[in-house]
Image (cartoon, rainbow, N blue to C red; front, top):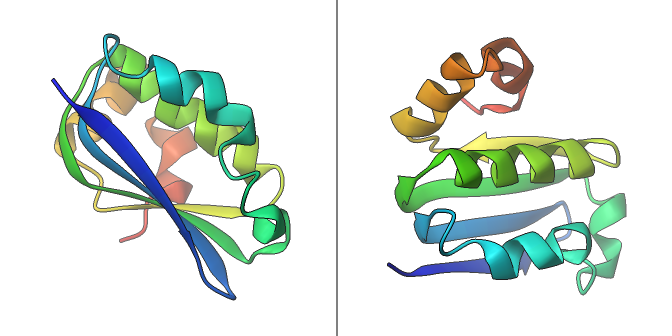
Length: 109
């Protein structure tokens, strides 16, 4: 299993793209950097929005879902957060953990 992420920035937003398998066995490097994930994008806190692009995720387990929620929670305190191309599995975890109402405002239609 392979997992990677990429951070890109424009004047209006920062985009975090997640790719591959976001599972308990692959997420440790991202988990360790979650609080400072966008630190190199020093203007991220002043950006209008953080987009989290999920279309390239191949699989997500419950630990991966928790990491996504942690990133949303952390950055939504500073700026708008939008999830793009949310896989059904992420929505299923939200329903399973009774978080669908919490996560719904972050999902970009």
